[in-house]
Image (tube, rainbow, N blue to C red):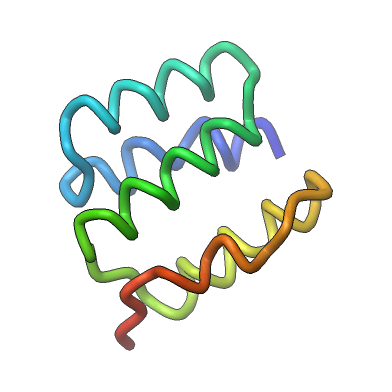
Length: 80
């Protein structure tokens, strides 16, 4: 799980505000994986960035694995 979360900031870098990208990357590097995923999802939802169904499903899977609510992904702009 650690590797999956640590890879997230770079995957979504072009779809996040720079400050949010830095927050996500910092949280992931510090081992705060739940915070990293939560900030990532909030940042994507806030900017209405497009995410694919596969990306949304991966984020849900990570949330579930960490015991966090998967409904955090409900606000994402899912296309494709």
